[in-house]
Length: 475
Figure 1 (tube, rainbow, N blue to C red):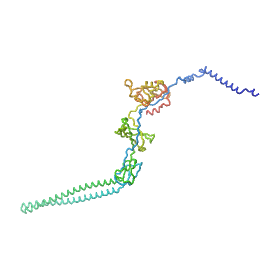
Figure 2 (figure 1 turned 90 degrees about the vertical axis):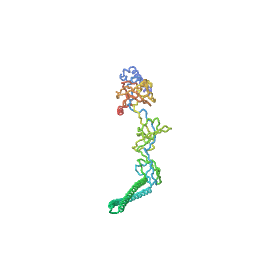
Figure 3 (figure 1 turned 30 degrees about the vertical axis):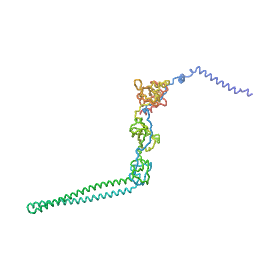
């Protein structure tokens, strides 16, 4: 009774499924025959626009900001750092090295005592020289005393001569009057002549003593020089640093006996460091003294230093044709030492120009135009990898090559493009120089999803540079 009263479950489910499928088929037929009348016209138009071949709206473009740069980056050279100057400190006198106060890596100041030699013999030399100086002074004092005594004798001889001459004159008159004998007058004349000879002899003695004093004073000055030399040699026993820097080498130890000229330590001045690179004769013509250079060190990553060309050697290696070029790098942070690997790139001496990608010359071309249209229509610009000098090449009439670039103005829905004719320069690695027609800060189309013409409205892609960045670059 139960089975006959209720229908079979499987049969019931099948009937329900058939009803649903039938309803769906009926709705589909109605939609196919009168769907256009059931949907709003705006939605129909939108659906048709999304079909292949329909209207896609404004083309999407990648906008970039024109900037000046160097088309060809400088070649990188490697070298090793050195101290701007390194001084070998040597012993200037002989003696035993009693103390060495510094070691490798120690910082030293100019005038700092770094070593002490035995100075006993040098001190004895100073004492002996000072004793000799005292003897020279005593000799001069003795000669000055003799000069004083001789000067007294001169004065006495002068008095005696005046008296003798007076007596001789008086006796001559008396003899002429017959008051005295002629012999007595002649004797007085003889005494006067004798007094004159004594005066001359005494004066000669004074001059001789004075000459002896001059000689003694010269010996005194020489002895003073000997003393200064002996004192200087004694001071050489205290070895001092002539520069500020760091000890880079130690070649002797305390206890060694040193001869004059024996090296003790080396001190390097690292206020600046020097990098020597080998440059080929072809690249050497592009380098000038005092030219700036970018220097990077593997030991100090993510930091760039600016150096200056200090010296260009005129002597090239005859085999390799390489010339040493010295670059000096300021070391204000004292982080640079000797022996570091340095990578040097010399700043270009050529003028920076506006650089754009080659794709900008083909932006807005139909995709089926290919590279031929991009080159022929845009002034014959070759492909990105070609290293042809586009600026040096000319068309008919010896005119510089020209191309067309689209610039963009406005933002959002108001963005539109305008074409410009530009003069092309050199090109390298997918980039080309713009000699005229595009200024730094102008925004141009680098790539486009479809063909463009003057006044077209475009959609800026998310890769486009915005107005804020453009204004910063222009400033």
